[in-house]
Length: 163
Image 1 (tube, rainbow, N blue to C red):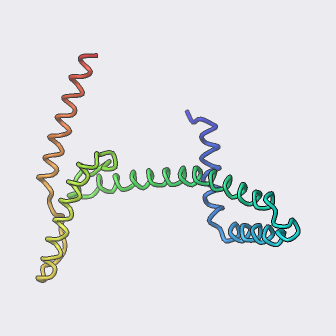
Image 2 (cartoon, rainbow, N blue to C red):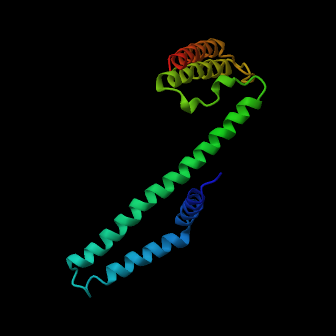
Image 3 (cartoon, rainbow, N blue to C red):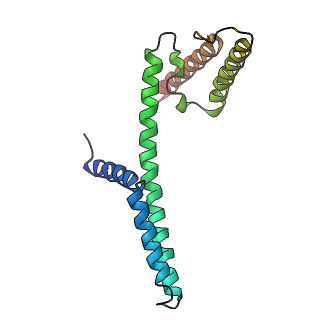
């Protein structure tokens, strides 16, 4: 069941992120800063006058960081799910590539190195006039990851038995 507070926050974060990127919002911010600057001589450029803009911008920036980060996290997760689905459905796609963002850096680096090598080979072949089509195999990396996943599953089962 959806938490009404989370649903409200999600809607608010999306609206705020959307509205903050609009030209009208930028224009309003420029007008506020211009009004503040013009009012400087009226208030004698006092410490209070400076404190008003400093406090206001600090509060807005602090809150916007969280709202925009929430929106970016949600967008990133949605893109990952969509990419995972494309990999899953593509003929010749490697299902081991699903959910890569959950791997440790070392594992991700190994897979990236495999694809970098494939790309270098494809570029070299393209320079020699060989067409750049087909689905290159990364069987060794896939098999290695399958073994690692199997090992981790066995270790997890052993831990579960102890508990």
